[in-house]
Image (cartoon, rainbow, N blue to C red; front, side, top):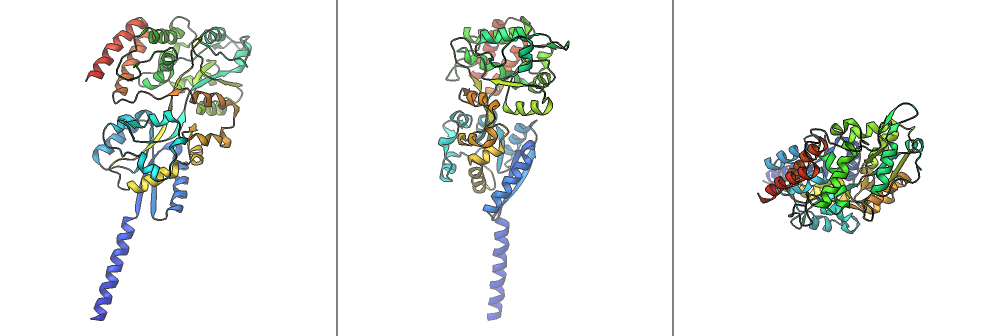
Length: 416
């Protein structure tokens, strides 16, 4: 009898051992392909500190990412932690399929006072925080100092106001000493499938001028207000009337603008710190200058806040482990190493890699950065604006007519 009891006890112990192994978290982290190795390195560090958790890193590409996430959320078969662009955080939260994170992460020791407030706004829906920002970015004016010198401009005095900006763009638009045609500024028409590029580069013009697509409450449509129309016209005229932007403007997305800058065809572009790194690699002979984005006389500059957030699906099979990993990645030093631009945790800006003087203007622009409107319809609204912006660039209608038509469509979307 004692022998039988010992056998049963041993069998029960073995079953419990197997159950423990099976319940050990196999956490799936969806990162982006350009961050895959960094994610794997941090996952290894995390697993060393948390031996009961296994992290499997899976890399995504940017194209189709939002759709892939939506399919996973709707199916209930989800990863545990996902990197998302901050602009899609609110639409994903609106599905009701994301886990609210503030209380969980506060309990895990995350210091939200260190996070750029505008970044937190990109993850806040109906008063709840549905994402943890880890990357923040804002455009600044990147310019070619050599082109400035050839055009008789002072390369150490970039334009600060719209008036100075126009004067510079006109002077820079010329045939240089090598017989190459140079255009003063790269306007992004966006390309047929790239509305975000044009939105990111033109909406700040409206904000600087006291306008915008929507009012502060995101209910009033202001895209056809005098301030907004004046700003859009300023942007459009760079291509249509003043011709200080290249003929390929309607097809130019951010990559095309950077390539034109690298080969010397465009002297000024708006861009992120990642653009500086790529330009240096592709065209090290260019002497770069970087400055805050020029603003209307007597007004302040503005820019859209870009960046990335971590989200955790409500149906994540290893939610507690995912919260622990998110808290681990909230560390400012880790964010500073993980991001391709700036960390959302502001103390991370003290890292050595951000001591480059060419990054100073981008740091300044972070303080003027605003999140895109936190409403589920924003994707539709952005597409409507882009469609009519292209019509104005094509001179199929005046800017006022285009923005009036856009306003009517946007009102219809908001009323649904």
